[in-house]
Image (cartoon, rainbow, N blue to C red):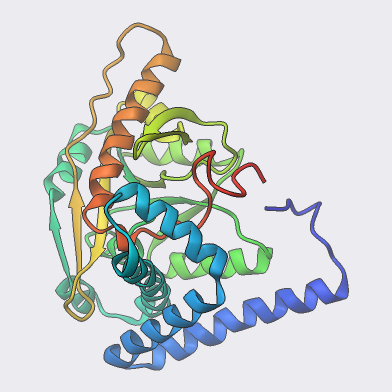
Length: 311
């Protein structure tokens, strides 16, 4: 991704940026006006179109699905790949609609196992870190959390153009979340939230700059972000792996909150502790993703052997 200083600021680029932002805004308005059954059918249609028009992404998700389940092949792999595109389209459709849904509607479609791990972590007084993969409808879970009265800080990857990132930030703020862009200023904001005994959400199944912690992830070496482990070790916050899944029911979601990952210092140095905890987190992410690999929205290269990984 280009930095702001590297971005082409030509009239053609500005026009393309305006078209992109306008498309998202119009899509959001349309999604909010649709009844739920029509929105679900529209998401499926969008997923099918996106799959046909994105052969590189289709091939990448097939690689990832093969890592999760090496037995997938042929028609089963093609169906799972299409399901991943459908799931991602559903995620966006629901994200657009969430600000207009009532608290009752959100709660009616949501079930959760392990919620006590969050309340117990907050009772300990050092905050809670929810470590998530890009899986299912995590925005729905975030909205449900804010509806329960939790203060939620989410760290997100900046998007280009900046106007699109601002629009997504406003969308999440409508859901009651505090949005922190990934970058040099993120650590201070997150530490402040944990000191205030709040909940921090970190998507952590992708290491954007490939400089993170070396781990084994689905049988192959790669890197994952060190942030969740580092923060938990330094602050004493509970580190909880979490997955949120679409269910067959209309507007249905089910979340799983796993028990806290042990973050006791072992005395071998902070770097070793971060490596040990991050590897434990990788195992938990594997467990969560294997429950519904077709809902894993990871269309980018994530292992050194993936085409384009070093770009």
